[in-house]
Image 1 (cartoon, rainbow, N blue to C red):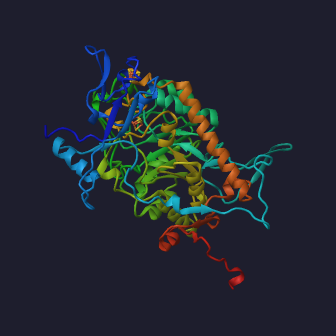
Image 2: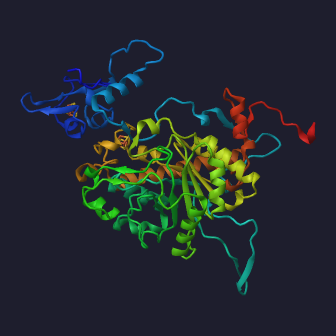
Image 3: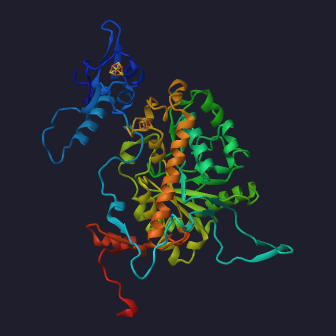
Length: 510
Ligand code: SF4
Ligand code: SF4
């Protein structure tokens, strides 16, 4: 009795409305609602199993189900909050590391919410984005400070010696999420969406399923410490990214339990069925910037310098000098993943406490590389819970060339952020390898939703750039002067390189 889980949610069925269709019981993968054959009706078997995934509520045809916070008050205590009591209870019960999916759920302040942007008034006219073009295309890859034009035929010109790069229709891509962490249908839907929109998605460290090679022009292949699925074919894609770290679990390798390694995952990762896929915490051939350069050079050579090679790191204390080393090691782009970034499975203690926010990390890297005179050499990709188009716009102004989303794309496909991804029981068919559950996600429907989201954020970006009188997103990158800080900490504004709202600009030194 003492080992019973503390319920978080209360599930109730209104039997006056219920028509006994059984959909709630069929859809509940966590054992909260079951269908009682003897009573011939659905019953709440164990409300403590409810994770508020909302699948039953969504599919009940008569609105008979409600989920509310469990009506119990914890003894008021400023230190021993329900969060801590629940965690202690669970670890005392299981003796295990607590695993969680999605990103950090602690209520830390979000710096994006302390930033607002500028708009044109009187002397600097706005652009009407509905009538005039606003350029949202950008490039993933190393930039040249100067370019030379050569004539390749009479009246026909080309640019000389351009480094490898990929054109994106929007400064927004879908970050690395692997097959195994997510279902085949979820990965297929997102690949269809980025292909339709003209941007990219990362493979994560799970390799590339044979059926997904047709999307290769829109794929960033990840080379992680486990090297799962890495082959010459796998590297023949739009871009390659060496994974050093991930925002949700800096310093920690990927983990896919053997139960999730079925035939499909085994074929893709090149490992036996049922084997735990545990990536080492570090890349065992990289212990210095020189080692990193050796791998970047090897990947450039293996792909005949045709495609950009980037490096992904988690946002940590020394992110700026590390980024500087990555530029000097010859990377074409750097991906920085902030501490709120999502995951299929991470130790909660790491997910909720390690790393720094993406806002500070990007501002710091952009300023540092600019001071060192090497900012132009690299594309900065940044993510770690971009929740909205406004977060995307702010991260670009803070210094990122491209933003990336993960959880937002999952939410577009139905995810309710219930954090149960490591269990493999995702009721929405997203974070599971169960072939039956995976079928719950309609690939075409999901692809359309994700494509709509990418397009909608791009339209928002066009509108906002127009109101600032900016006609190309590349002119907005690192334009911190168009941001203002409205938070409580002036020192934070200084770190971000953003003026406080109302701060006067003194022209001509007066
Ligand atoms: S889905 Fe709704 S109507 Fe159907 S059995 Fe469950 S509660 Fe009753
Ligand atoms: S992907 Fe599924 S299990 Fe993971 S948070 Fe979303 S709804 Fe929950």
